[in-house]
Amino acid sequence: MTTLSPYDNMSPVAQAAYRARAAADDIAPLPRAAKDDALMAVADALEVRTSEIVEANAEDVAKARAAGTSESIVDRLTLTPERIRAIAADVRDVAALPDPVGEVVRGSTLPNGIDLRQVRVPLGVVGIIYEARPNVTVDAAALCLKSGNAVLLRGSSSAYASNTALVRVLRDAVGGSGLPADAVQLVPGESRDSVRELMRACGLVDVLIPRGGASLIRTVVEESTVPVIETGTGNCHVYVDAQTDLAMAVEILVNSKAQRPSVCNSAETLLVHKDIAADFLPLALDALAEAGVTVHGDERVLALAEGSKATVVAATPEDWETEYLSYDIAAAVVESLESAVAHIRLWSSGHTEAIITTSQAAARRFTQLVDSTTVAVNASTRFTDGGQFGFGAEIGISTQKLHARGPMGLPELTSTKYIVTGDGHIR
Image 1: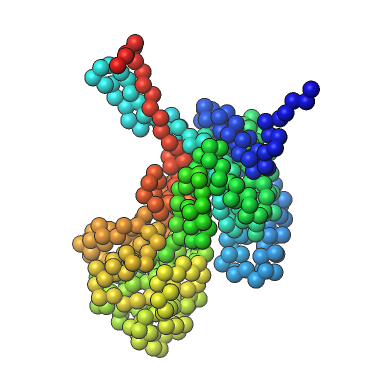
Image 2: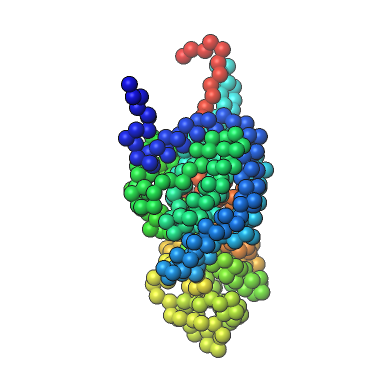
């Protein structure tokens, strides 16, 4: 008599989800030491097998360039030995972080003598749907493992060879350390059918986290039956106030825009108070020109750009809502701090906004009025990052307001449960 396997008649995606569910149940009760050992093994394996990863990544990069992919996207796709060392260092940083699982969020003894504790527990099975950034493969796996979760990784087809190599390294290291290798899986398939099936795996997958452009995020939010933690695009603003240190403002602006323009926390719009515009913009435009940035300016910016070395073109309405992810920035002169806030409220994606000012009153007013995940005062927008915030790697930057907001580290990958301890209590 033939015994049917529980996986018979299941699609490859469903099989992966079932294996992830079993792995999540095994990982959830593990002590911190077991998870940290696995993460250290992952970091070591990444460095030892760097050439294997770089070789696979070169295949993806060559295909991307042949397809005419923009250099900003190619940059996000590319893995070098230096970047792999940095990724391995991030994994070690995650291992060194406190384990959130079991943390008592709140607790008390009720008047009837019952002991009540709310403790952190893993989410379970976390699905990540993301675009051409293979470093996310490792970041997501490390954070999920540390927080006691299993992870299903669905990267873009443009990074398929890179992600396949990375997951092979991760699974070998995790399995070799004694944890279930199925805690880290690449979702089978390169077609959109596998993405749709993952989004419909309610009951097997506990939460989905999309990372990528607006179209990807909108699709996951609108079509998924699995709960979604929405990460957002980064239409980030830098506002230069009437009272400011010009040199500091120029330095922060250029860093926010040009230090790495292909990422979500780079600045996409510059707003300048009218009272400082004539002094600040000539300096800023020359500095942006030196960094290779094209400015999409309103009428007042265009007028003040005469004689500048910068490439300045007339802004269109679309420029104010654009996440360029390139060496481009929109720029406008505004009447007041309140006008800057009104512009941000209209066009921002709710990611990060910065004010550059020497006025404490203006800084307080701006931080009160602007409602984004991060509001920076006299600091670059590029600091909105889990690593920079001391969270280790991040699994994404949530721009919604439920459960998690801003850079998502380990605590955001947990839920809670209540433990009620009595002594024969009945109600």
